[in-house]
Length: 240
Image 1 (cartoon, rainbow, N blue to C red):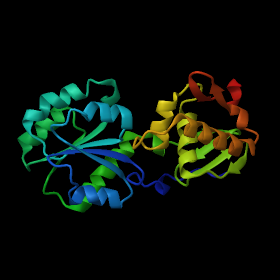
Image 2: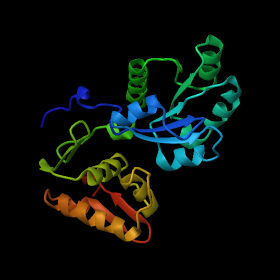
Image 3: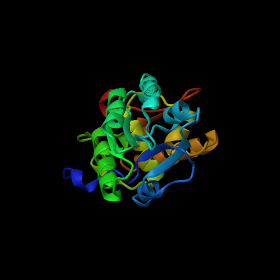
C-alpha cells in the first residue's frame, strides 16, 4: 500500500453545499459548483427548513448569497444548533467593509462581494471545504486491517483490495468513521442517498447484504453487524 496523496482529492467534487438565496433557481455561480461535481441544494432565505435541512443532509458548506446586516442575529442563532456549530459558511453581499464585518462577526467563515469572479468564488469554496475536513474527504486507516482512501475511492480490508460501487463505498466509509456506533435505517438512508430521498428498509437490508458479501471476500464480513430492532454497526478488528 502507498500513502494517499492529498492533491488527489478535489474538495468541490462530491461535496454537499446548501445555498440560501432570494430564488430557488440556481444562478451562474451555483451552476459552476454543480459542473464541478458538487451536490447543491437551494433554499430561499425566508425558508423555515434551513435547520432541518442541515441536520438531515449534513452539508459541508452553507452559502448565503444575499447577505444583509439584518441577517446577523439569525446567523448567530443558527450557529447555536448542534448540527450547525461546525458548519463552514460563506456569506456574499455588497462590496462593503461594514457588510463584511457584520457577517464575520456573526460567525461566517468568509465573505465575498457578490461581484466576484467565478474563479475567485471557486477558489474560496475549495479552501473552505478543505478547512472543513468534511467526512467524505477523510481517510480511514488502521493497518493492517483497514484502509479507505477517498482520494481514489479504493478500499483495502485485511490487506486485500475490494471493489465497491460508489454507494457501497460511501456506506462503508461512513460506518468506518463511526465504529461501534449503531445507525438506524433512517440514518443509513440519508447516507446512501446523499439525503436526497428516502430508501425503504428492505432496500437498506439489501445494500447491507451486498456490502457484507463484498467484505467477506477479504474475510471481513463479520465486522458488519446487524443489531436487531435498532440498525447496523461496524466493529473494527481490535474490538471484535
